[in-house]
Image (cartoon, rainbow, N blue to C red; front, side, top):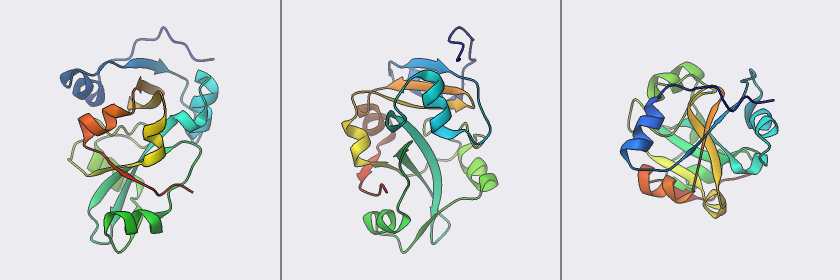
Amino acid sequence: MAKKDRHVSETPATQALRAAGVAFSEHVYDYVEHGGTAESARQLGWPEHAVVKTLVMQNERAEPLIVLMHGDKQVSTKNLARAIGAKSVEPCKPEVAQRHSGYLVGGTSPFGTRKAMPVYVEATVLELPDLLINGGRRGYLVGLKPAVLLAVLGAQAVHCAL
């Protein structure tokens, strides 16, 4: 069971959210290697569909980008590439993703990344009343309204869920 009383120190993500004046809730859970959104949703009692994963990908020119996807869905790289006008899109290797984002894989947040990258969000994520997304550390999610993804990240809505 998640311990909600554990203190989580500031992360680049929470600093970025606070600087943008965003209200968010904090959700701490016991990180499980390869547990993914299914594990965090289970521990926190949220539907996995409302736990949004942050994926660092790259186009055919090795230019990084971020995709925000429902925890219980996969990204159609073909549909994503078509939607953003790229020839192809593929996930970055973990060490490359870490270099671009500044976060460890499993703790990647779209907020406060080391390098500015375009952000794409599965359009249906924006229909959620609330969502959980990584707060910049393994075992730490922040709860916020989907509109924050557009306002703070300038995320572009795309249809690429499988």
